[in-house]
Image (cartoon, rainbow, N blue to C red):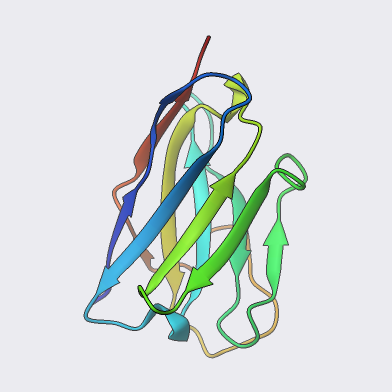
Length: 127
């Protein structure tokens, strides 16, 4: 069982930056494909970024490409999401998820392969 915990959310003004982190205990996240997802009230869950377990290939949603960066910090056993130039539309609960499938070069933003999910961290962007 993989326990995931997100951190780094908060209330910020438009144009600011945040770095969200996904941490795990008891498992090495380097062995898992990791995705970041967000969900706003009344909206469906949206996959924003993922990083594969095989070769660290990354995939981004068109809505965040150029502003969001997903990366691993193996020394801390975490996967982070750097968010730049925050917009009010980025307001959502952000969750990380782990895919235990065999290593592959492509990761999936649909959410279906991910079996383990964190509880989420809230990002609120407002003037």
